[in-house]
Structure formats: C-alpha cells, structure tokens
Length: 562
Ligand code: ARG
Image 1 (tube, rainbow, N blue to C red):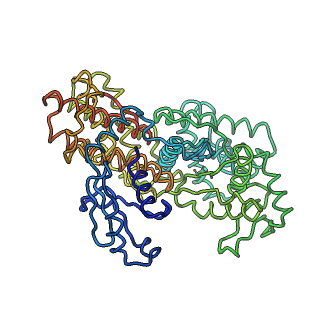
Image 2: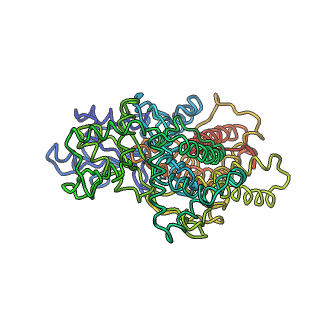
Image 3: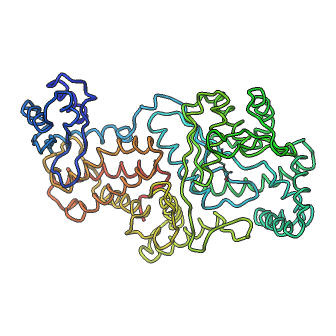
C-alpha cells in the first residue's frame, strides 16, 4: 500500500476531482501530521474560502482505517496516519522487496549518456576530476535504479595541442628511461618544463603546434609517442578507478572523434553557420550574448568544442539518448552553453536534452592545484593518505580488528567520496582531513559505522522472525521516525535524479543513520523481552538494508565490522 496514493484516491473520490488537484505535502516537523493538504488551489476551483473548503473536505473523510486523525488548521488539512498500520505496511514491504522497495521504473528503459571523470592525459588526475568521477558515478547509479538505461563515457582529454607541447618537451629535455621509470610524474615534469621554457622562447609554441598537426595528419612518430604517453596515463587513472570501484562503459576520449570532425565542419559550413575570423573558423553567437564558439584554429587544428559537437552527434546516433549529461567544474559553464547552442542552431532539436551538471571548486588545505606551477597532488597519493589516516584511527579504536587494511580502504576512500557528495554540487568544497575522517561527524565513516552497528546487533541476535512482528511496539517516536525516513527514501532518490543532486540521497542517509542511532541509544534491543526484541530487530534489519543499498548507490562500499 502506498499511503499517499491511497489518500489521493480518497480525496479524488469525495470531491470528484482528478488526483492532480491535490498537492499533498509532507508537513514540517513541528506539525503533528504525516501529510498536509493545502486547500488554496481547491478554493479557486470551488470559489470558496480555502479554510471553508478544508473543513468541508475534512468532514467527508470518515472511517478510513489507515487514517488516525484528520485535523484542519486554517487552509490546511492535516492527516495523521495510524501508526501501527503504517509501521506494518512499510516494514513488511521492505523485508519482502528488499532493494526493490527503493527502486522504480519511471525511467522506462530510456537511455541516458553520462559523461564524467574525463581527466586529461599527461596531466594529473586532480581533485576536480575526482569530484566529476564521484558525482557522475552516483548519478549513474541513481538513474539506473530508476529504470533508465545508463551509458557511462569517459571523455578523456587525449587530443589537442597539449600533446604537441609534451612531444616538444620530450624531444628537447626528456629521455626514454626517465619516462619509463617515473612514468606520470616524469610526464608532468616535462609538461611543466615546457611552460617554463616557453616564457623564454615563445617559438616553442609553434613547434608544439606543428607536432599536433602532425598527429592529426597521422604522422607515425608523433602518434607513437602520443600512444605511449596515453598508456602511461591510463594506467595511472585505472589505479584510481579500481580503488573507487568505478568502471566506464566507454573510454572514448577526444581522439576518438578525430575522423568524425571533418563531417561536423562540413555540416556547419553547409548550414551557413561557419564564419571566418582572423583566419580561424567560428560560429558567431553574438545574437545569444555569448562569445563565438571556436571550431577551427588558424592552422586548421580542431578545438575542444569541435570535438564535443562531434561527440554529441555521434552519441545521439549510437545511443539515441533521452538525455546526455556532462559533469564538469563550473568554470566550463560557458563552453557548454556555447556548443549546446551551436548544436541547436544546426537544427537538432535534441540539443535541449544536453545537460551540463556543474560543480564547485575543491580546495585542499595545501592550497589550489595546478599543473603548470608543478604543485600537484596526485589522486593516488591522496587516497593513500586517506587510507593511512583511517588505519591509524582504527588502530587507536579497535586494534584487534582483522582485515584492517581492507577496512581502512573502504572507510578511508568512502570518506573522500562522501565529502564530495554531501552538499549541493555547486558549493565549493574544502578538504580537511579532520573533518572528513571524523567518525562522529556528518561523514561517510559515520554512516558506515552505523551500518556496522546494525550488522553487529543482527549477528548477535542470530535470527529474526519476520512473520510474528508485533507492530504496536514500533509506534514509539524513535521507531516511527526511522520508518518514516525509510518510507521517504524512494522519493528522495527520484528527487536527486530530477535535480542531478546526489547530496539529496547522502543527506537522507545521514538522517536515517541519526535516527537509528537515537533509537539505539534510547532502547534495549537484544536485552528486551522476546516480542519487543523481535520487533526492534526487524526494524534494525530494515535500517541495515537501506544503509547498504543507499551507500552503494552513492558509490561507497560497506564493511560488516570496523
Ligand atoms: N577533459 C576535460 C577537463 O579535464 C573535461 C571533459 C568533460 N567532458 C566533455 N565532454 N567536455 O577539463
């Protein structure tokens, strides 16, 4: 039974109005009710004062078993559900359906392409890419759980003039054995070196550009070096993905579109969208109050937007997406607005289904990160540090624990991931070890620890009997709070998808964890009389289910002990 739907049916029956006229709300905490119906809209329909309408409707609702009270407060009708029936419905359904209780099929098999992570070859995988990875992965899981068919694409930055720069640097100051030994660190060093040297000798830029043009023309030597640098970087990225437990359906980076760009340029020409400016080819966007979108450089080299347009057209053909979602830092906002507009001007009505999902900056205690200054925090190192610090905490708290390393990995990395998902995307995130690893704070480890607590209670209990639950026992405030939150979770997941905001899921999980911990502190579970114990254990089992499902949904792993 879905209480909201049942209530809507009743309201619709007694008024002879369609269900869409009843905007049932969840009232704020200080109102003692489970649902509230504001009657302003109905007042317009019936041409009567809202408080009068509220009274009239309320009077007609009688003898509904699952409704314990109907109260009118001004223009609102407040509904209080019968607690026992509510508890029975929710708990029995969760125990029966398990994860399916939280899933839905509103996606109806529609295709969604998600473009996220997308680090740049031979540059560091930095905290911004981590954020894109983590948010993108959470959205992938969230949409999948709503019945969408998701495709994840890693649009690697593996093409462009930066490779010309790298090849130039390698030719001038690098050598094979250093690159072989030091891999990504050596590539980054060379990249930094190029930027230092070019200050003194700007002509190096031309050399770099010519190497890139060679790459585009299929020059064997240039492509061999490019491929080598690529493999080195990919190995580094793969380590990070493995540790996060993230896989992509496609690793089709910018280079993948090299042979698909001429067609785009031709099409733009044909549609009269391309104009020359200073030798370069652009799409003028002045009418839309935006700077022009650069399509071809003066030397014929393609650009980041060109590749994005080619990729979008390719993806539309290949996946027939209902939405194509791009998760990047906010500073790329204009880039997406520009080329989305170009796609629209090309006459593709699906341009409206391209969505940029931006996020705020991440700053570390140690300051901002940049490749050029050489001040670089490698993701590998950051994750290592998270795990090492977590292990230290575990050593202090629970030295006896087995599998300490594995658990430290789950918790340490979980802490980093959760930190990226706990606030509205657009907010800047500061990264502080003390904050993210605080087991008592609003952190990933706190929820993971709550999960461990449910596991340990359930393990000690041995077995639960779900057929003989006395639901009256679960009508106290602490239990009801948990049950209500569990009931709301499915709606929160939908809300998170609609807003592209994983934090809605994270916050809700936090609320459930808080509610459970309060319940746990206030009540005996294992030492309670048999009937009470059984009811509370089943509630604990539901929390156990929802926390595991929810944490995995946002990309964290769980452990049974900690
Ligand atoms: N490689 C880019 C960067 O690091 C992000 C790419 C995002 N995806 C896209 N289709 N433009 O900034």
